[in-house]
Image (cartoon, rainbow, N blue to C red; front, side):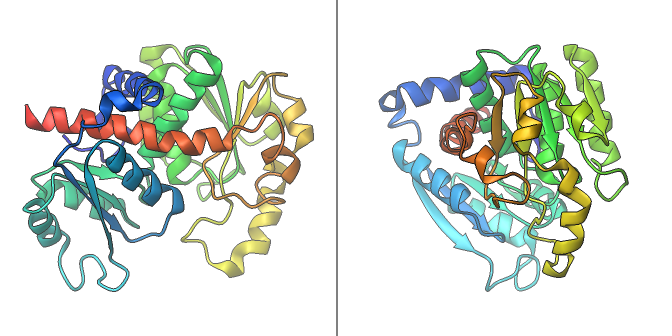
Length: 310
């Protein structure tokens, strides 16, 4: 079993992983040998502070070992094919996580690996982040069912896609507030899958081009960078103009529920997707959210290894 996207998990599996993550966080010593004698390969095509630290520290806490391998100087699929990388790495390690530019490369890696492969981010999906987010929401709100999450900003990205899938799987209502147009809205296949999930769980999925409508009765406010890695710097001013009405500021936060929390998967730029007052304010839980990457991923790795070894 691999985690290429949240579509690889059933609702039951996702819920179990989240609950196990909360348990591991409360009692880490009980899991100190869960990955004993296991080795994780960490393939990085894109840099990340939280992804590397959380996976590497997580393996250490569970008695395992992690190897960091940057493919910056040896581009995936060029010097060595994705297929050969998968086959060779599988002979040395027990599990692979990959943070890549293209979802197709991740899918190919999983197809040819003989050990579990985890998507640690691609251009289309970011499942590990959303598992951690769902853990955080459950810790803060005590439940998923009936909670409303409102997302603001660029919505044709990996975080929004995975939020749509994850929220709809666990019964969270999700409203996406973004500019109108194919370039800024979630991709059709992801939205259709989220709608399908929502029918099963009784949740609501909506794409709105109005921030004030999206924020109504929200329990969780979420935003992400307007300048993802693949966006050229010369587009910055234009994108600020396009997204400025979807900035999360104090005025927008006041339109949500009084006890609403603020989330951002980080890194964040104060004065762009959110103001400093919001991300540094009392409603912000961004660093609890960041910490939970470790616990959620530890739970995920335990789950995948058990499935693989059966």
